[in-house]
Amino acid sequence: MPSKVGIVGIGHSKFGKRTDATIRELAHEAVRPALEDAGLTIGDMDASVIGIAGEEFAMQGAPAAVVHDYVGMGNKPTYRVEAACATGSAAIRTAWSLINSRLHDVVLVVGAETMTKVSSARATELMARAGDTRWEYPFGITFPGFYALMATAHMNEFGTTREQLSMVSVKNHKYGAMNPYAHLQREVSLEEAMKSIMISHPLNLYDCCLISDGAAAVVVAGEEKARQITDTPVWITGLGAASDSMLIAERPTLTGLTGTKIAVKSAYEMAGIGPSDVDVAEVHDCFTIAEIMAYEDLGFCKKGNGGKFIEEKQSYIGGKVPVNIDGGLKSKGHPLGATGVSMAVELVKQLRGEGGNRQVSGAEIGLSHNVGETGQFVFVHVYSR
Amino acid sequence: MKFGYASWLPETELVSKFIEGLGNNKLLGTKCKKCNQKYLPPRAHCKCGSTDLEWIDVPNKGRIRSYTIVSFAPESMSRYAPYIVGVAEVEGGMSLMGQLTGVTPSTLKVGLPVQIVAHQPDTDRIVYKFKPA
Image (cartoon, rainbow over all chains, first blue to last red; front, side, top):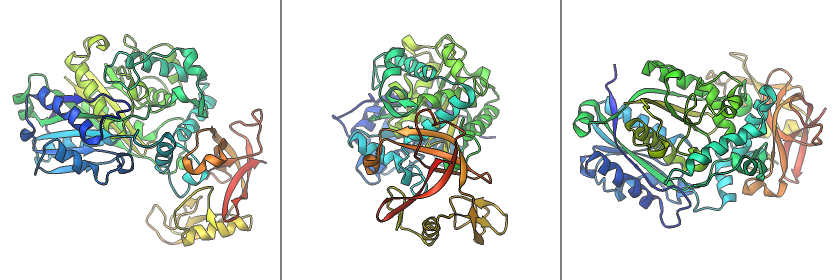
């Protein structure tokens, strides 16, 4: 039986095109408030786990070492974790394991990424290289392209509409406009979202998440320590992880992520809950179709009904399961390594009742779903008060 | 000859053989002699761990499972944009990614029967592509 692990401190940098900072300053911007929130100093940390997806984006080899030193961790042990866009969640899972192994008791988790230091064309190129460089990249497939393949298949099989895709974007921008840390704090109308330029048909600009810089940090501690540190720890009560084939063509279905279904089953079992128990969720909306598939694969609705779920506003506050009410990757931004940690920060706020004008009243159970690549890395975490 | 519209990986013996097949209008996969798993594109090693694989001829016909029209291409592919990338199920249950040409907005659809043919995008490059059967 694993011991309980809790989050005792949270911090978040402003996400955006941060010309004023490199990855080290962004990390500092997230780590300082996380320590302050926990009422601890950097010297109280036993180790750091640092999630950064790409050195080419950071323009720095082994960037985690720079972050570890810059935030003042000195000679303490550090681990760099990478799981593409799911890097941040992999880092939290690693911290949980380190604490349960009794190697460390208090671990600082930092997720950080700078992506706007390179041009958009270069960023598209770097992300395309995360596809299989032998049998996928040579055809010119891009990351929006991979998810567009899933969107075409989903629309064809279930009748999901162009309008329903845009409705996800409208929702996430609505909540992103209320989040001071979000990259694009602006609402968009359905008409505006539907009319934007095509990136990879059927996905247009407003179906795609932003390319952002940012960092997020959490302080994670074992049960006894967590209770000493704070009266309001948020516990990690369920964990699930899975993978999938490297080549997307090899998969029997293109209308969902098998890894999500496997990971969430483990996480629900470990937490002893089911989908109807989730009060608030952070899901991986790198593209609008990804959020629609997540509703289905996480069990919030039946397979094929994801389009209807957003159309009926079931993922708004007041609906069945409020989803991405911090703006999601779409409006808050998606600095790869930071995203999974940012999801944890939002859920901790919600479970503490510190969500402000975005608070889900009485939220007790939160779920995060973070996907790397096109499902080769999937992490689901369940959090409880 | 190099494989694909863009790539920088070295052409291994496996890829060279695949390219040679394409040059002769043949689509070559591999099959594990131990567990009978078939691979298209080919692999040198089976996922079961076996290194004992043989080459097989795969029928060059398929059906489009999904597609996208890429408008925003990676740097290396910008001169080709826009282009259609599809996933086609090849007869025999295997699936391939590739570019699709020769379609119009009214003929482009999931389920479209396609032929898989060799194509030289450049003097030193070869690839296969899908076109309506």
